[in-house]
Image 1: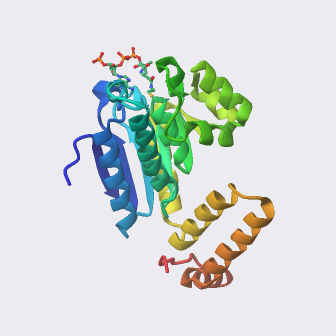
Image 2: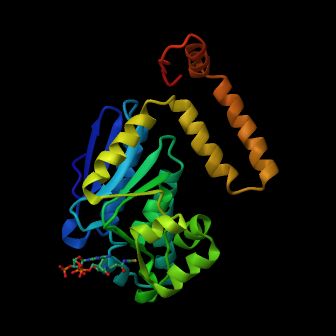
Image 3: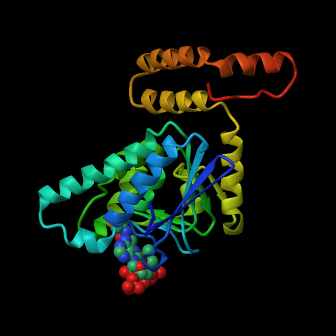
Length: 261
Ligand code: COA
């Protein structure tokens, strides 16, 4: 497939998906979202890909939100709800992907851009990045999971501050409140994200998927159920060839050769 709104490149186990509409600060049109869904599905199906990075083209924006022209064209509440549910589905597919996804936030991550970053597993921001949920200024609310994932990351109170005020915060402030995991100089962003992606790509693929799934599922249920779920996922990890290889390699004092089996 020829992408119109994305750049997709894979190298040494890492797939980099770049939102490529810099003239509108990489705003998420429906067409962009559909291409994203396709790119994600392909990355999931490609055995060579073991970690994914999402980033934005140009120095200014990661993603400056859903496309406001399209938001303006929504004719009524029913279509609005469908629009949100559809976008949420694509973000769930990122969150539930069996492979780790890193957001390399190179600039504005606003509205749908912030929501997209929150659906990723790990967030690294350039020191020039700015994040926020400014939907309130348009007379709407976040619709791609922002009212739910933001409080889970930063707590209810600060999430309300951001969503009700529509304020945009710096990368350093996002780091302080736990919205991003690391802030690096803008010039080092991609190198940092790619280095982490390569390190993760070298880990056993099935264990990566089980760990991600255990955290995602467990963080939405009570502790006892979460630990029971963890035990089931631990059991699945124990049944892999990579568990045998990883433990034998340790005991033989040699590097493990994981096969993703
Ligand atoms: N949807 C559609 N177009 C967008 C957009 C969006 N979410 N965000 C920016 N653009 C467009 C602008 O309309 C402008 O297009 P133009 O050159 O045809 O006028 C272009 O991208 C550049 O943006 P501009 O506003 O001129 O840049 P700026 O540096 O002055 O401001 C922002 C940057 C991010 C503060 C500002 O663009 C903005 O507030 N964007 C909307 C953010 C938002 O509300 N997102 C949530 C949507 S739910």
